[in-house]
Image 1 (tube, helix red, strand yellow):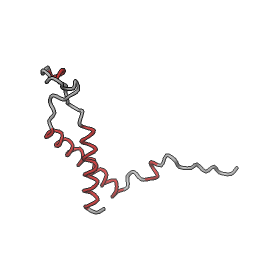
Image 2: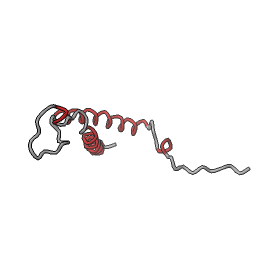
Image 3: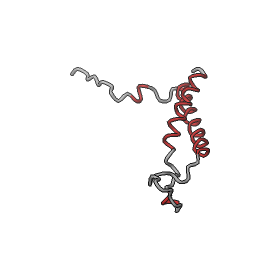
Image 4: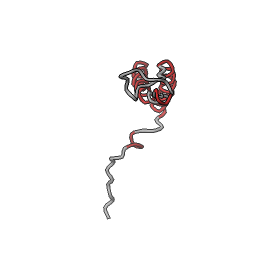
Length: 93
């Protein structure tokens, strides 16, 4: 596998990981006990920390990409293991 492929896979995994991790640890103004700004949505986050999100997504994406590359190299889980639409051919009796 080429390094450019690994970088592309890492970038895709990083974006997906960041989106999945967005809602974790976020509190609304009501939950945090902070007064709202007039016109603010009730669901607006009060404690969004993008630096923390970037660090977490970077670590998790690096681990997931490493597992992906190792699986590619060693072939732990292949197409045959996850083929759920495999046709079952019965033996003639």
